Amino acid sequence: MHSRGGFCLGFILSLNYYDVCIYLFPDKVISYESEYDVVFPGPSRGKYGHCEAGLWLKDQNTSRWIQLCTNKEFLRSHHKQGMTGVWVTARVNKIGSYIEKYEFIYM
Image: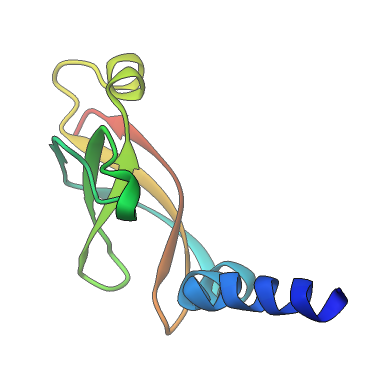
C-alpha cells in the first residue's frame, strides 16, 4: 500500500517539478511592478474546461509572460479603475519564477 502512495506522490510532484523546485529552493524572493492583461476565458484546466479569467503578468526574472488563473469576483473586488500595474512577489532561481502573490496598483 505504501509503494502505491509513494508512486502517486512522486507522479504528482513530477507534473509540477519546476514549480516545486522553484518554490522549495528559491535563490531569493523579489518584488516588482509589472504590466498585465486580463483575458476571458482564462487558461485551460485540462479536461475540466477553462478558468473564468486569466491574468497575464510580465515576469521580471525570465522576461516571459506568465498566465495565472483568476475569476471575475476577485477582479471586481481587487481591481479599481485606473490601476494600470501589478505589484508581484515571486520566488526566483535559475530555473524560473514562482508567483507568490500579486496586487493591482496605480502606476
